[in-house]
Length: 118
Length: 118
DNA sequence: AGTCGATATATAGACACTCGATATATGGAA
DNA sequence: TTCCATATATCGAGTGTCTATATATCGACT
Image (cartoon, rainbow over all chains, first blue to last red; front, side, top):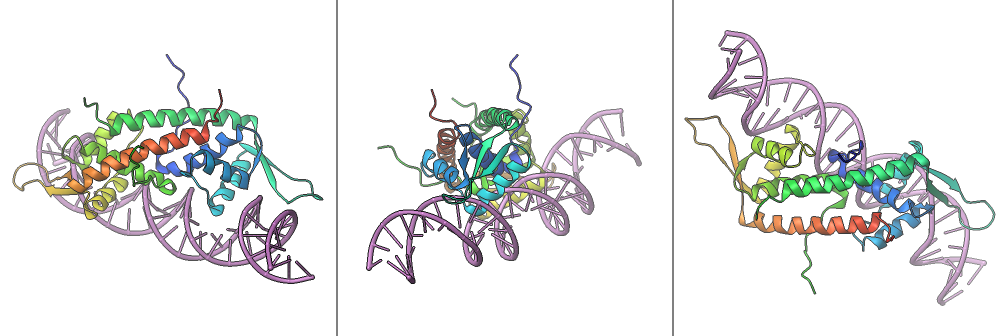
């Protein structure tokens, strides 16, 4: 039988799972800094998802603290101060599993919400 | 062009939108009472969604207060006391729009989270 | 030179929602 | 009659997002 993902979307806190998936998913495209992530996600979702600063940065700090992403400040001297994040090995694995979990979530949602009607 | 749904999934509170969609979606199959809704949704989603009582009933009260569902107590005399809910006209319309909004949400999620890769 | 808006990060308080626990009550099975 | 499933209701705790505020740099316009 198919491999089951061990990770589950936390249905009691979907916003958190969703926001983390958006950020981690974007970081699969390479290192990004916070402000850049917000713009990219907003653009790619055609405005559906727009991060508030007070939401974005705490999430990035949390993901860094749990070792899913690692941040590095831009060199001083030249350019605006910014912190660039990239996925760690652990973060890559987690992201894969999280996106699988979201697929399962969406299947379950459809099964539950749309009757097996004609 | 296609009709755009005016309703949007509240991305800052996905759990709430999701729970309401699950309940309203189930009620499209006909009147249900609270406990029954919880069992049905859990079964149809293969255990992905399981309502806690402390979550379910406040939502039902909220939906009733906003006129999306209407509840009626079972006749006294005969049988266990229970409150059966059904969709109102307003609730049917809202449910249709909410489920459309969820489809759009899922499209946007995929666009944002999965790169436009090969 | 000075102001303004966009870029860029950070944090605190207010608000909302779910969770777990608790309470009440009935019906059927052991 | 004791226990469990059914059935509804509500409160406090915990957590997460939102809005507002703070700091700082850069480019453009005046």
